[in-house]
Length: 116
Image (cartoon, rainbow, N blue to C red; front, side, top):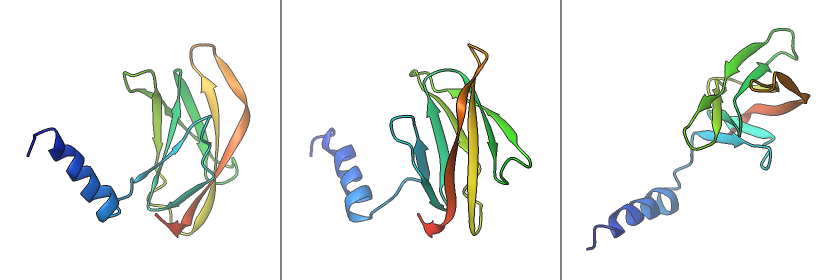
């Protein structure tokens, strides 16, 4: 069998036969997820350096996470949602580091309950 077919066959087995799912749920401007199933990690991807300001308790407390440069023009932040039990709303805002400005709106994602 040609060596180039082996990776393809592994993907077919992994994703079509075994129904393997990603542990990440991706949020992007052109694909804003609304729900992160229980056990999944919310990954926020943006196209410029940013800080994700986020909260799980309606902004009573908040944390900041710096987006990491992936080297391909995408900056990512993985928020620790995989260990959340029950259902919670996660709110976040985006601060653009290069322009020193806020996006101007908050975003909300439901985390938990449904299985990944």
